[in-house]
Length: 407
Image 1 (cartoon, one colour):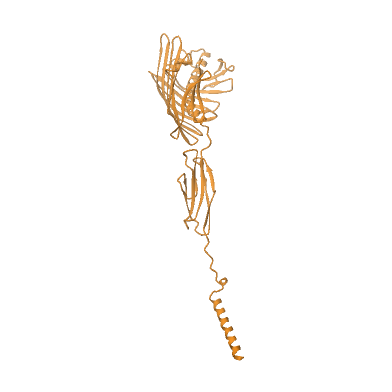
Image 2 (cartoon, rainbow, N blue to C red):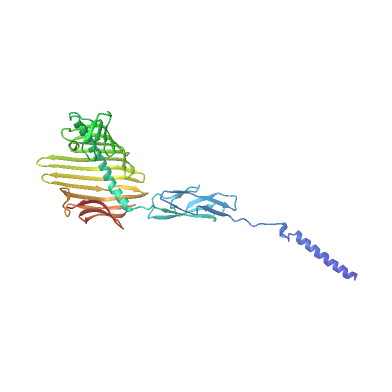
């Protein structure tokens, strides 16, 4: 009996010791924890974004799981650029209508941890018809603006001078139109530093005439066709403010047009130069020939053109009035962050008593419209409903550029 009790007591003692040894050796993990390492996460904001060419986007990054929050920013497919502060800039010119850039931010603590955003760069919707018309018509409008300013300035001087007896050139004072579309004006001597023309529709034009030399024996039109030097500043109540210079002598001519022109409800900055030749002959009839090379720049808020235009005009009058007109253009411009160009454009026209003539023999209509050096249009001509028309032929439409009544 005693031996049995001693045996049981011994077994209990051994078990107790074993349990204590297990406890002391860390068998209970709750008394000695070892937590797993935290996972690094990287997130980028915004996750997606859409920009126009040349646009910018500021990205931000959130990092957890590490005290090292340093990162590296990259544009994976090299479409645009990004600073190490996360400011992305889209390319100013893209091929096609849209492209996608991949922006990544990479953890410096673990290069396998990154955040990714997609950036879609899309050109704003544009009407190619508007592009074609702007590129074709704007240079001609600016050219005609300079010509009309010179003609109006010279005619204003003639009107003021005739009202005052025609013995002395009058370059100051005020001319007031008596009625809409009337050729009659009244004159007052004020102001004494410029010549003001007030039209009955409310438009006011101020002329500051700084130089006027030439033939004053006939009329303003003859003054501009004969040798002359004429420099004026024209300010219109719509905001147009330009300086025009015209010089011609011994068959040579020079001209400049500089300043601001209001056209299509926008203000354009104009800086163009003209060089050319001319001849004028009066015999049994009369003939006039004029050749001009015009270069310079035109710009508005969303349009910037380098102008490269050639014009030739010839008229002959005996019993009938015959005109030959030619325009050549290789002008280029940037519109909506895209580069366009008129390439090898030739428009050659003939008129007999102001109606198109020699359609099969003299007329030439040719040239292309380029977008980022890729042809997207071609200039064509044809007759339609009693008119001779010149179009820009695009993929989906023909854009009317000029038209002339045939009969």
